[in-house]
Length: 153
Image (cartoon, rainbow, N blue to C red; front, side, top):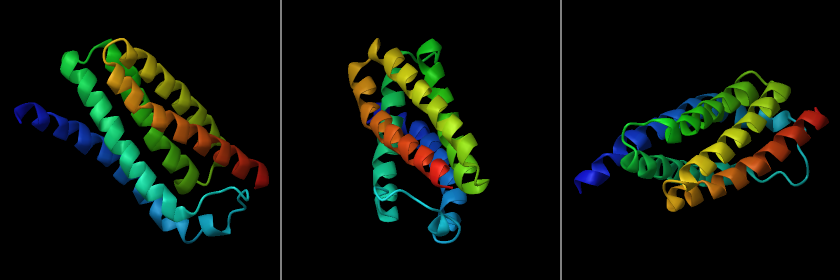
């Protein structure tokens, strides 16, 4: 049980990132974003919350698993921290500032950081690396959506 308590800081950090993103996203979804031109294949807004909730749990567990094997927090976790920063910044660029181009640049950097994190984690804990694959796939989809919205607006 004690080892699972060390998961709490990871969950808190990841959900703090989610809360910052939500701060910018939620007010915009029903107002400004509703008037934005989107591709026909854009999913319903109701899908994003449940998907991101599961992904954030997986991101937290993944980082925690690697931290437990490398508690000094050295190099294997560096790309993990970087991808969290890019993750947070995307919502600010896209929903907060309505800057589709900057959001697109950020999300490409996020994909690179997630790939680097998967590569780093794979050497230490294969399960931790695999936990990030759905995140990578979802962000790939989100990047294509971001770029389509950029093109349409």
